[in-house]
Length: 506
Image (cartoon, rainbow, N blue to C red; front, side):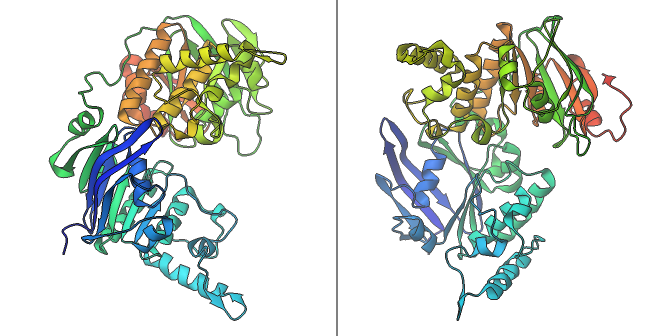
């Protein structure tokens, strides 16, 4: 009997111009949670797609319980007990929980699908995990966390023995994270081996037994989690010590570039923005912090002209301006990188060049004439400035790693030469190496006179990168914290205020 439930040996996979995996090994034990760690583009997703039968390796072997497995497609992977829960959930929103769990393999009766049996069988599985979900509910009516639970139950319903979880906590709250971890521990007691992919180091140290690190498509090392530390793992991931992770050496001026007063979303019911006032200085990184639902993103959407009926006064460089649309905002020199680059930012079927230049078409299109040389020049300028790693300008942006997609997004808006750049969760879903590069880019932009508003749910990011921090609670600003007083305690105090008595300056 093999020591390992799963062994992947010498896996190599190449694409045109890119060697995604080079002789990679990976082992998973029964009942183990084994993290797969690496920067975006390190080869994690490619390795998982090989395991799941989506990609065919050029060379290499896969063994399950010591026997070589022929995984040629998704169905053969499933037949070998392998299930993958992808970062983007693939449930059908307008179908019930039971219909999603049994999709494509519905129990049949004399007159077609036996819905009664399907709901009963699904409910039994749901109850086994005590997730509080009814099998006849529509997926669209569930929270993201509940949908995540349905994905897990669906995976287990295939008699899954190897479960891959790709960034499962990226869109759920801390309470829901702990519930998910409880289910994962329950699964390991049943002998299921879990491959866990996450950029959150704290989760790896909380839930995982071992961790394997990939870098540039190659196997680097496997460590027992209890015997390593964060600094060691970071150095394995990036191939160097990160002596200066957060880069902030520019001192902002006192000149006010943007002043916003009494901003609200104009909604009488369910208002998310209520009388918000703040000011932004030239060359400053101004942090906006608060709990999920505090109204930070919604405030910036009002300022950027995305909220119909928004109210309040906006001054740019001392002059009152009226912003009724995103075009107005851009004309005044305001740019915004949205929170969700997948849904709100990138054109995924288009190239890096298309995504880089879509906001500055006037610079290379004159009536029917397209200056492709100028278009390529603009694209290359921001590939170089953002240090974006891409095989070519014509590469589909969806093929890039998360960190490089984010750089394309920031570069696109920098091409508009903004005075004010709003970054909503600028490093969400990117690895530590890409984060450090984005911080350096932000620092360089402030040196060039760009003023940045940064919304972030990551307190270390807010604390180390911000010159000042405005904190919000239930649609209102509860305080402004100066640089020397920024701390986790001062932020959380203002983020959890239950009564608003005006703006505190800390």
